[in-house]
Image (cartoon, rainbow over all chains, first blue to last red; front, side, top):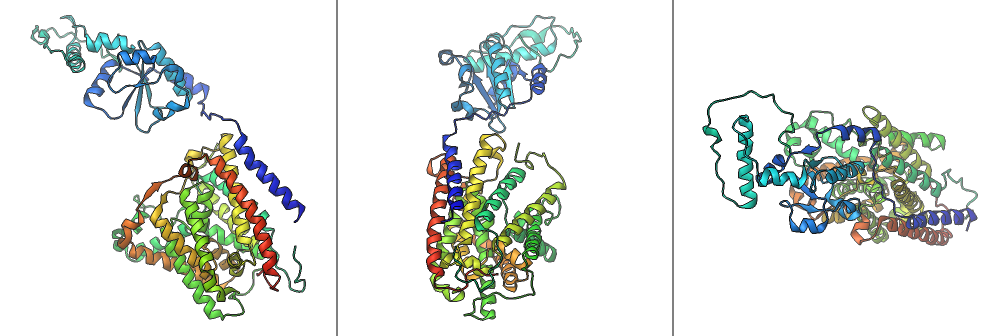
Length: 203
Length: 179
Length: 201
């Protein structure tokens, strides 16, 4: 048996064996820092509570709500079909299957949107796209969807439409009775307002 | 190793292990560059589709197999990675043949125990069988067995095991062809 | 960071130049190792020339181990590498038929091109045979279309099938290959004692 062959065989076995001994390495595809900074300064990652409510009511199959609060808070109250991933465990391999599913839009939410935004940055760094933050978090959810504020009479018509939508949503989520507001019966006092930014109706 | 037949001119081949290492590195490079392995029958499949499409386009479209390879946007079928790979294989083989002095006049290589005609019929039959089998197996020995298994495909492993296994089982019946 | 073409790092006409080069290297290596002779190839079934097994297995373990290392270092995204999908019934039949074709014809399509390149008429017959075979298959396809796509397990990897990590698969293959090299070396020595000519052009 040629010695060279034995040498080669040993080298090959060592290489292959080395594979088994390599420590676990999480290959997170890190995005470039400049891109991360750019994405952070964009506000397009925020979605309003109205948008989320609308999609839940319509049964949008691409909506994936992720609750980043502790599990106890999740069990006390959570949005319809939300998944619980506490922010500390966001990077754990167990939960990676929930992120990065093709065509799904992931929306992070917390009690407010600060922690949810942190979750967004973490997920963004891990290379996931199609991720969003619910603006204002659950606090805003309560204030806009569950207990919407009736607009003043001088407010523009859009606000009344929004209020009507929110009343309907509130009924949907809490099962309360809907009372249509009398706003439409006011006098014609159409005050032209500037068109708001794309992400309107926040807290 | 065994140099029993010093009198007979030993053909100049490279060490098979060395060839294997080179081939493995080439496979690795192919995966790195193109994300897929090599396949010889892919080119044949496309060529057959192209010929049928040129001769009888309606038939090509109605046949569920050909229609899988007809490009929707009217691009050329032959302008495909696999076809160029196969053409490259021809040239590569030619180059090696020239370098090692194996480019000779046209000849039929056969065991001295059978006639050239038998060998040609066997080659043709083998080719037909391989053509049919490769479509069932989604690739030939280079496409499914080699590249497939190298990419850890279970199907590739299956095809490879069967190909060699069946070959060994039936080798006894065809031994007259070879030894 | 690979693979390059699916991630559009190399695009356009370079695609086909690369295909040509890769094909040329493939053909060169095959021919230089002795695959242009059907009698060399058939030797694996009769024990007098195991070049097929040596080249095949070596290439496989080098590629497997290499892929795993590349993936570990992040040089290649293993999820973007094409894994041949498994169609159980169809592949079983295909492997069977190809095994027959292998032992009768003594070539496989890739090697038949190298044989054609150096002027072997039986190689040409084999290559033409593959065309005819594929044509027959396509024409008869409507008959067994269901069989063709039956039992689709998808692009399942060996590791997933047996519930182990692919690193272990690569390692096991390496061991099997080394053992096979040794065993076939012994067999070859034995068989060649009775033969005068076992390496053919």
